[in-house]
Image (tube, rainbow, N blue to C red; front, side):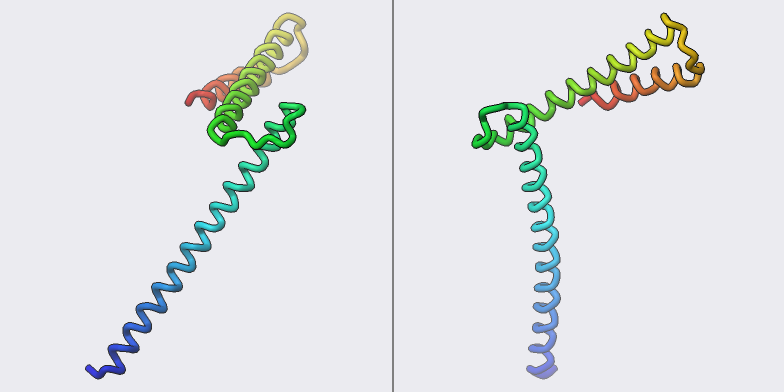
Amino acid sequence: MSAATNWEDAYRVQTEAIKELRAENADLRDTLDAVIAADGRAADLWRAAHPGKDLVIPDRAKLVGWLLEQNTALRAAAVEACALARVWVTVWGDKLSAESIQRLAELEKQILRKAQP
């Protein structure tokens, strides 16, 4: 094997490795960009819920905890809304079909299932 062939093979291997590293770098950059954008949206929600703290950047761990609390509260409100709708139908005898009543019960169960950690 000539020295030129060895050099060409090494060059080809290195060129392929560089392409793979660039593709991996682009994937990692996209992931980081998505994380930064999500953190920004979450911080905006936190600031909207905490008037007077417009210049505060919440700690990421505390921000995630706050988001989880918000999620739990929203799920509880959704469950309560389903339960109230079923009570309304039962007590007031609204003309909802049995299928609609069953769907409310299913939604409530689905919300509760997804709320489990």
